[in-house]
Length: 346
Image 1 (cartoon, helix red, strand yellow):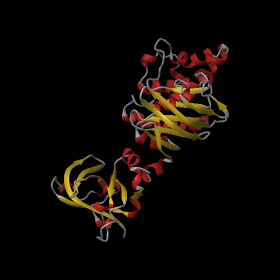
Image 2 (tube, helix red, strand yellow):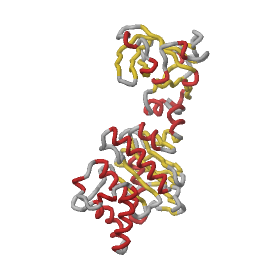
Image 3 (cartoon, one colour):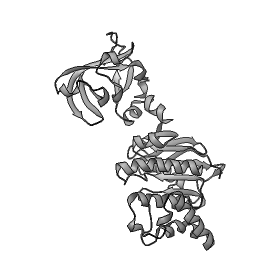
Image 4 (cartoon, one colour):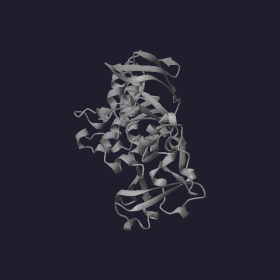
């Protein structure tokens, strides 16, 4: 089964006065796992539903492989879809749920059963074929939804926040399971989430969306360490966007006020000796401090009034036990963890 590319060209979709997609263009590579990431209202689900065919854009094109599907009905696109609520039929057994899309395609009863069981074996639910949906856990229901989506061997899979209803541990386990399934099937996957860690864990590339536009599309490490704007920096984890005027170099010299810098909260040290020869330092008063197990979270207020978040790992948190609100501290960041952004991108 050869995976297909997806080409999006200048899609625009409005709902009344609200612009959900604002001339969005991107190319999703064959076999790629691409995540659409952004806050509520950013346009990520609208874009996914446009690819699926459930939302029709006012302008622009959607091309799957070499076929323009912009006006094509959803059931003609040969796309597997997993929805947020799984959309399973409670009156059917696990196997009957998976067989349903094959029956709609008028396959023989033998083929229907064989392919449904093969799909269930892929998601490790073969032994659950005759169970009622109500008897399954959240994670098992999610696997049934996956099996139903892959049973007719689509070359493209769309997923709309499929893990949002699961608890943290199961959610993290299923992230690896979904990625494994994607790799085993050799399909193109477009995945929607608002969870930054989920996107970083699963994706080949991440498209960060806001206000109906793609703000940045890149590999996870590039998105995290080299954001192109303050929005992307602050949406992807605990980031501090700083003016050079609020910082000093590790040599004690003032930095250029025109510089706009991004430093991740977890890259700060409270010990100057832990950094190299170059980098920056920030001094301020502790506004709040909390122990979170794997780290100490410190809210630092600079003389300018700006608040900076420090996340000091427990493995290098000597002295944090003795800190309290009102204490003056200096935080240090090595140059390799200081990313400079274009000022006009903020």
